[in-house]
Length: 352
Ligand code: NAD
Ligand code: TYD
Image 1: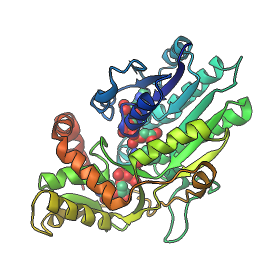
Image 2 (image 1 turned 180 degrees about the horizontal axis):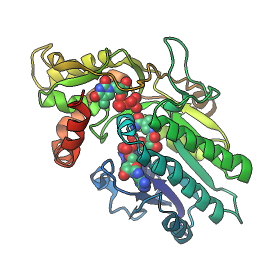
Image 3 (image 1 turned 45 degrees about the horizontal axis):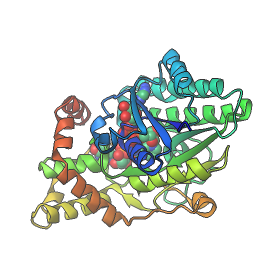
């Protein structure tokens, strides 16, 4: 019997690579096709463990390329889509919004059109699963949590492009009866995250005794979730989620940036045999991010109560594992740092 064919987009990126590995290892009866453009954020090194697995195939391509996407769906007859491909970094969306509009909005619509076209005669058992972010809900004050009914209020070009794609996914469900599900997740951390995001950037700078840039006063709050917990939630929603529904995913784990960085510095002092307090001296307050959202925090009781998901790791344990991974994988890190990362870093931080 032919294997069930599943498309995962953005599978060479941070979260996507964890999802691809989980699905390839856990579901030998699925054929997993990973479609990725390999932008600066895509890295096939993330998939070394499974690259030769018989139920895995990598396809290099761009979701913005409409005819290519149609051909791909025709060729593979996907029964499920897990869509993670996106431009994902807020600071880059402030510097250059256009790529975010193309990939996050136009790319998503191309996938929706292809799924609609290929599934029009038999919708039974099909699913388009769109991976989104809690940033679409905007910014919280000191109190309250995002629930699934919270009105959208995106405030950066990144979150506005993700909000737009969420609306389009829901519109295709409502208007064309496309079977969809959406999850909105909080900030992820863990192995293989590109060192433009706060935690891996700080780990790399601490390791190299470079200053740790903290935007504004470091008072902004994020709700951090270990990436493997997100991948497990995606597995659960893909198999058990109800069509047309939205589920919020979060770590119930809020930290002010400055507190988080102090914890990270303490862990790294120990791991690197430095004196207590040595790494914290690298903390440097820099010009704030434009339009910087103050606080994100997720109420994940729906996915917990309805599907039985919960986060598995305490933050301290997750941070230690993450630090161990980066210290143990300096080749992975060095390969990235030798690319156009230096140009990005100069542009982004030397202007502040
Ligand atoms: P990432 O930037 O690490 O990876 C994105 C991947 O998409 C890369 O492999 C890149 O090559 C690929 N890609 C980009 N443009 C493409 C295009 N036009 N065609 C095909 N592939 C393309 O991102 P991530 O952090 O792994 O995030 C994955 C998804 O999860 C995104 O949709 C993001 O919005 C969402 N999300 C991320 C977080 C987080 O904390 N990182 C939290 C919630 C939701
Ligand atoms: P980031 O990892 O970019 O995720 P997001 O903006 O999607 O939440 O940033 C997390 C928080 O850390 C956010 O409040 C911005 C802040 N930050 C810094 O203070 N310094 C940095 O160098 C970076 C990259 C982020």
